[in-house]
Length: 150
Image 1: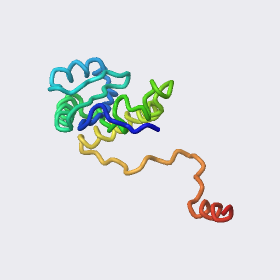
Image 2: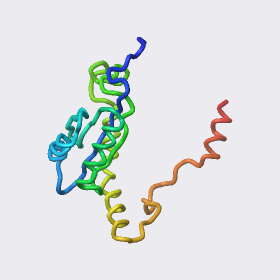
Image 3: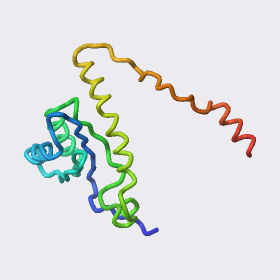
Image 4: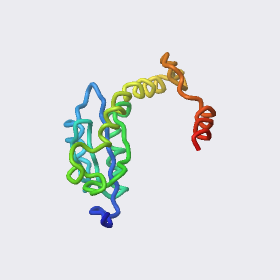
């Protein structure tokens, strides 16, 4: 594999997810452009992708989270934009990480409920109630299986 030379040295990229009944990704993007101060903003189906100097990105995120704090979430991007090791232009098809976003997006409403409950001063359970699923393989039994196969 060829050596990778980053195109945006010294920058960070973060994903901003919006799961709000009162704000769309497009509306969030318009507000973000107003306070961006040199941060590259890309609107996505789930919110925004922002790239820039770490301080500028942090400032932008602090500003836009203020618009709807319990419905706007932020996550670091693992690889920089255009990175040939992960870019769909080189690999073909959708980026594998977007499948993770889809899964994470489905649970945001539960996080929102917890945040809103905390704001109201309500007690929030530490763990989700049991889903009734069959328990997974015990770690000790897994180790025994691995040892048997070795």
